[in-house]
Length: 249
Image (tube, rainbow, N blue to C red; front, side):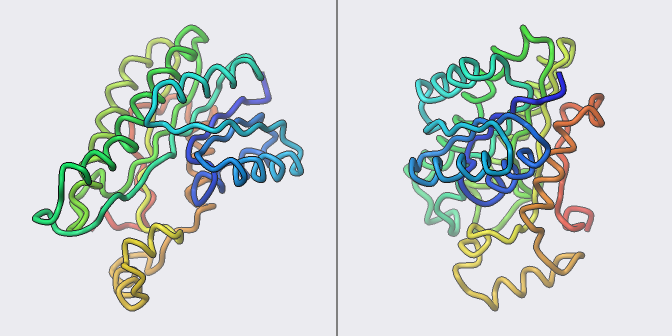
């Protein structure tokens, strides 16, 4: 089958949106999801204008009924899922660990970890019987190294890396691949929030990067497209750091 069916969670902004547009330009069929109805339908219209067969389905990945509905709608529309990009995530409440609360933990882990787990659960239920599929989870350099002031976020992304490796082992013999993309700083609103809206702090952080700049959302999207493609058909259980050399230091 030449036309891939692609499902993307957290597709309404940043990396998710750029990834949806990149797949649309490749001619994929797309189901995009998120929590904002108006933005979701606008994105679906934009994807259709690019020539893609696209649909928006509202879903909050923290709730299993929403995830089940999202998968069911995708199957009803296209009959299969070839690629799933689990991009929905949040940085949560940033700050030193002494200021963190159980509520901050719950808010971050419910999206980043539970949301990824539920997505994997129901995507694998489709892909295992198919005998094919590629799942790409969004991790972060914070899933590979510590980030001061972001302990809960880093813990959640370390969990995403563990989920990726474990589920990859469950799917490998059936022909289902599971990998993660771990971006460094990306030119999005999240980077501004990590910098506390302080342009000098952001510039200082980026100057510490070997590449001396943030990634663009399109650079991350192209890595996702590679992992979804047959060019990566023997690649599974891996986390690809797209970080301008940060984790090589």
